[in-house]
Length: 200
Ligand SMILES: C[S@@+](CC[C@H](N)C(=O)[O-])C[C@H]1O[C@@H](n2cnc3c(N)ncnc32)[C@H](O)[C@@H]1O
Image (cartoon, rainbow, N blue to C red; front, side, top):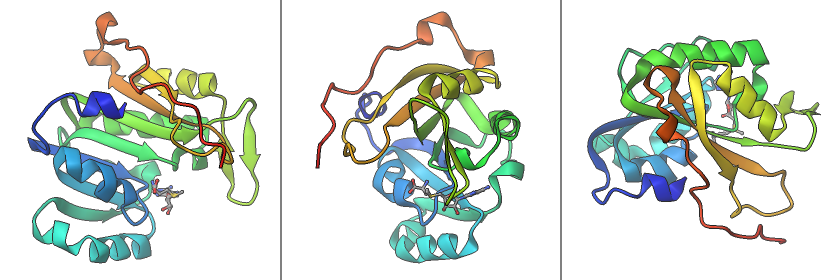
């Protein structure tokens, strides 16, 4: 996935904007998205995280690279139309039941610009797993793919992030394109170099 993102040479890409969803204090925003996109918004339902993120990323905010922190629950998040080239959703959708997740993805669809895409990064397991402590659902890879494909998006690639240690459940990237822009040739094989997971 990272390889696909970095295939173009000029970063950050001029005129582009991304949204980091369920961003917490903006870890993905600062470590990944600002390197690729000219402007980044980050969103979380927790105002303390957003304030902390804005403080820690103040130089990026002053430079206009981080445009805003949005305090809003994912379940009703409705960004303006054609606002983003990429929406990155990491470690948050396990809080949403299936129907709410599909409705959320569909609500995000209009906010993507032409050729925009979603990147979802999630824990996976061999069986459905409910983390009682956090009220978080971890699904099988195929179940995630099937749910995403029930929405207005098509999964065009998915693969494991093998840079993460074996001590945590497998984490997969899912690359999703809006169905109304999808063509058969968009389907992709693995994008990351093959690596063994670290034992730690
Ligand atoms: C495990 S953290 C992941 C943070 C970030 N995506 C990352 O990978 O570093 C989960 C985040 O999701 C946020 N969150 C949980 N439920 C949410 C909801 N319904 N709407 C928006 N954010 C939510 C939490 O406040 C928390 O910041």
